[in-house]
Length: 453
Image (cartoon, rainbow, N blue to C red):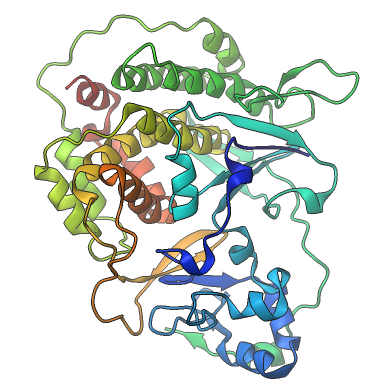
């Protein structure tokens, strides 16, 4: 299998007990069934504690209810007792995978490191060089970072209409293991390249070199979308132009490509990517509705940290920040790489392009107010493969957490906050994509006007 990762992927190392925002706080992690079975059979005192803590929530998922906002197996040094005593393999899939976002597209996989993680965040913003990606091949499943994801068949509702199309993916390779029976379940009580672009690889022997999707029998949309995404990433990294001009061109090409998808001309996308050139565009009259509307809209979504709405409110009146364009560009490329190709599932390319640009503009505004604005304990979020679900914290901590203040004029903290609140909540992501389709304030014209302002 071919795997594509950011150029800094191999440098990642968990901060463990030194992490200022441990992922074992606030995030109530779902325990996969195979790991739950292992805990059910675990010997000794730790096994007794595991079985005592393990419960089933309202959705039928195994989980560890948090104790004072912390995982009950997070020790005083902020280290995992399960990992220390039983080894990494004994932790849940979510714990082993975090902070990796893994996307399977048939014969290839793409992995990004979530900017919500302080260590990954520091790597993303730790260089001003253009962000690139590298591709490698591996034949053994155990050498592929991150577990495979279960495919699903979805009704794709995008701007191009509704069509039933299988989601790109591969069958999940679940480890062999027994399933808990009804009697055992009753013990648990429910809770109330290789080019540096990373987009081209060497095909198997005898095959021509081609973009991913041309070598194997995959969803043909991948073959059409990959050259387009490569061009969109190149537009973002073209430092001969200002970043705002690049973001505008990025949206214009995505908008034109969206029309091709709506007209079922997806096979022409590679040619569009190769030939497209930006044209002079007239200034929009009347300014843009994008801000402060966006900041107010974000307060209507689910909230992880209770001070998130206050940060958004402060950003409404804050003076513009001075975040380095190079770092904002890397942020844009991070989001574009992760989200654009997801259009293969629902046809909504423009919405995901708008999500990428909105993320950059919001983070830029928040950077001006995040410096010195500490993280505080908030509501619990249940994290599993299906995204995150909010849950009220049972025993809040006393006082704010004043660790992990942002550096670089707040940019790192603004990015971390946005990633926590939006990227880890599928409901919030879906709400944004729906708003892009329906609300005038999020129209392409409003985005372009905001970039010109």
